[in-house]
Image (cartoon, rainbow, N blue to C red; front, side, top):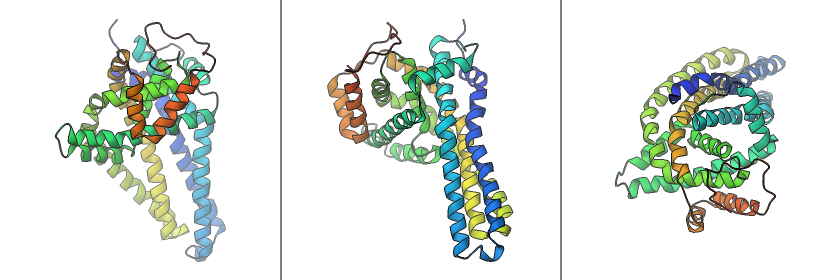
Length: 323
């Protein structure tokens, strides 16, 4: 059987991309409707007064609350479910017939609630952010390329400050190592990233140019359209703020496509690196020195070794790193 290409995996899992894009887009729509309602209550004459500022703050709070609520209750299931299906496609070279069933089963097993997912996500992403600072230093000092660290930092800013697709790699690894406990797989996945970051970044620097151009043009167009339509009723400040908020949410939706493409293009190499990875306690402790968040995550993983074993048996071809 021919190996599934990244473009095939992307196209066959497109419905998850659409579902994930819907989260910020629906938030943007609700945000605009809310702004229209609020500015309808507050008269135009009060738009630049104290009442106008209060109404703008209320609108921002409602927008943030809606975005968080959608993500907390259903959004995380779309993202985690998509990564579970992509993991299956890459690891066994086959797209499951019932992707929804596989996604639901995998997410229910790993993340029964939004709180568990949010705790896991914050631990992994903050660990990556802190460790990435040290990797940037390695890029400058060890590779003898003075500008490489700055380029990587710039890419981080453009793509989302934390190269969020790297979080998707760890999430895929967590589903792949389903015989491990949650934080044990997270700690191991981050360790694999620590070792394989140079291979992962090969496509990132090249894609940064397209991201800069596309995101800048898209954000500028949305900002002008939204600000121009909202400013007459809500005031220039609220109109400009609406343009920024809606533009940001639309860019977040567009970034789902980018993150998914980067994930499917690098996951095979990431799994290949993980297949033969073998770490000792000293190497984990070394990463703990560079990231306090990772240190807590690693300690939690070590404590999980004393918890009851998971019901799903580990793959015999996949070795254990921790515990």
